[in-house]
Length: 478
Image (cartoon, rainbow, N blue to C red):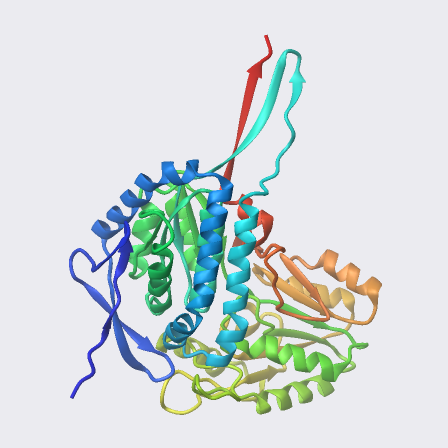
């Protein structure tokens, strides 16, 4: 006897649809390794239909007042709260995340972020009108950019969808959003909820694979392409968007340095860093996975971190004692395993370093020491529950190691010396620097990096402004 698979569908112009050619993708629950649904494998016809709907809906949505858009976003936030249990269930099936942590660590921030952008819709700021030429008055208008093609990742399917659609809609844009092919379930549910609130065509969801995303970015209709994903994907998007000079917003990979000085409270730092490194199975671009420790406390710190890793638990979503669930898919498990298998002879696995169980894609909390700056695992993003540790001699070397990667998204400094913390925060070449903490985010502050971590900001007024364009209007006083 076989269980009938759930059928997920695209949401285009206010209605749910299968892919025009009927193609589908199997969707796997990473906690079990079993298929639980099918999702559309959308092609050009589906992308065309979504873009046409978004373009048709844009003029009326653009011309709605900020207060009208605010009311809509506040209704969406309220609806997400009211249907939180459904959203959590869909996300857990998507990702295998712990139920309790999904409820406490994702739903509240998502709702808060939507409400922030609802308020931001009414707070656009610009230079005041004035006379900069005799007999002429100049004003600056901020306008929505138009249709936005958005691609969300699989590590935080719900929250990253919010980071994309909330500022876009608040600014008066219309949206065509594609979830990852491995995690479409929660996004399709969000479309059902949002579709009952916004006018048809304002918010559309197209499911599919990389080719679907490529078709969205290359489509002539969108004025902007926004992606959260790998560096490779970001480069491809930027290249495709360049062909018709689309605006591009990229939030890509990370390799966050965690710089721990000798005056740090080791026990407190290890507690926070281990959580920030292993949370969500390390599948976070800002995860605390590259620790740099002063040589005088290196051995003590490594021992404490290995102990913390050994005490950290991964397991099924309904287990209340687990910190994190499985890696998202079989390919990601293979990638993480490959990094450990390819470790150089001078590296030492202090904890973990192996798969957990034979069901699902679970990987043990892992700590690796004895590494050098040019080692593969130091330079490249693992995106798994793996924390590397290096030793440094002084502040200058700590900065050299910290900045010596191609990523530049987030970082942290651990010290009781205020002046040192200020020097480091200035010199660290990362879009975010935390001091004596790692990973907290708030809606009011920007999130985004430099170098191969991309450009543009999520969250905050800066993220909101990224979804607007600036127009100069000059009028004669004669």
